[in-house]
Length: 307
Ligand SMILES: [Zn+2]
Image (tube, rainbow, N blue to C red; front, side, top):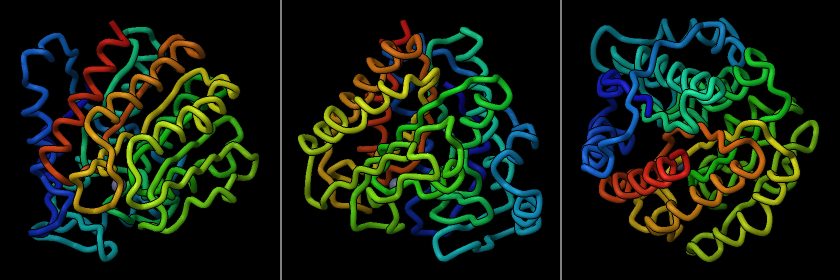
């Protein structure tokens, strides 16, 4: 696992759901003795070149300029930065890239990156939905452009559509992007007709007030067979836990066990296609107990698969 205490320095305004306490809740859950053997590493600051594979310099500059000396600055109605936000976001990207490096070097079979802010709503030149940089898309580009992989798959099970990842990978035919998400819901994208410039984007919206059975069908019948057919050399995961039945921001009814199930199925497909190589990163999840329990279930399955 890659994490860093700078996640606690990205402070959001009072009442904001994407809050410091999320990181604390997860770390408390991962302090349980069953995680004693978890390989824990610090998420490094990103190499600027990695960020520039997905975002133009002018956008990166605009984020740096926006960071206040105190208090908050709002980049959009949902997305705010505090004095510590830049380092936290840079380490979010850096953690994802370091995780790709470690997995591709064979140091670890898989890795979970536990950082905030999340990343999957950040578009090429637009911060939105609590996100500054497109962490998982940047990780995909590093695997392709730096390590020379020919095919990577990104699976996003956050309850919101990963519009940013879709935007950043829209013209990238070496990357498949698959997403389940509640529809209708923020940000409004993710219709099945959105398939990318090369047909490598797969959107499977889920109806509000549906649960684990519908989710499992979406993965078993639609997404995972297409991922297998794509034969990825690495699977990246946007792991948001806001489809949980307890989450206040959406209306899906997944249980903690459902998050363990989808993680296990992803690991099985990874074992069949790419030697089990998986890099997962934290996205959403706003009920602290559900977030802690679901993340623990996710990490536990990753550890079992990587053992
Ligand atoms: Zn979300």
